[in-house]
Image 1 (cartoon, rainbow, N blue to C red):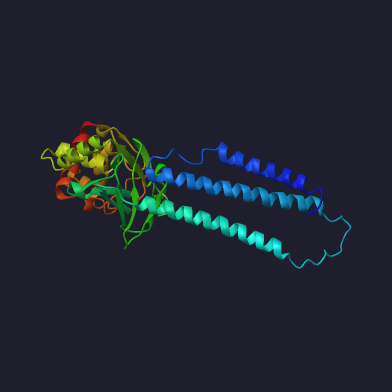
Image 2: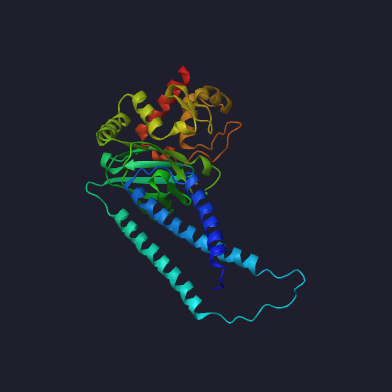
Length: 339
Ligand code: CUA
């Protein structure tokens, strides 16, 4: 190394590293974790970021110094000196990355294996993705199916994914993990929520026209509240009172994310306004009940002006039991009359 080069190299490196570190620290890149798995992934992420910042500073220092110090004069058209490599330097720049990458690999393997280790008393949830909605069913509650994901705090949850059509991807930023849902195979992810709250479930794989609205909520509840909800919903959906059952089906399936319905306090705008069902039925030239039933079972049969076909899951109605479907139809009819 040339005499007098240490100070400028260090200077450039510190400035470059400082800028990169400031960018890394100033912006809120990651949400506050809400699962044991995220608590393990976040430090790994920062470990990699620190390595990247150091490597970045070294590269910028050497490059910046070389650009300034060895710049050819404007009228210098001669070739550079023939350099045939430097064995010592090459060993160093091979060994250091090998060590860094191996360390990251070992650390990642440890995090992955800990994150995959299921705790006791695992809650199983089957997740179905389809254009453009999520549904969650709970085998422990006789297959109760909902459109919002509810989870108990501090309990191992194993989500098992299937897709009815194309590839989607499940992502809750606060849980830090993403999992593709692929038609024809089943995939899974293990989550141990450790913070109460409502988080957004996002589809993070471009899957069609409604990709950007393919969102729902993950609600982390206390174990007692979760058990109460699970049993309450299982009985509400099968309630002989069609109003109670229909309201539960509407809420559980996340209909309010896309539809407005005053009776349910729903204000979604992507799909038709369900307070206006009677007017829509008139436009479609059908009796109200037939129209409502058809629109649930075969959403593309009649498309109200100003709305897109293929946004509502075509198989939505087929996933409901007859009892759930009847309840939902009666609920929508009576609610829209009030609204
Ligand atoms: Cu489903 Cu994007």
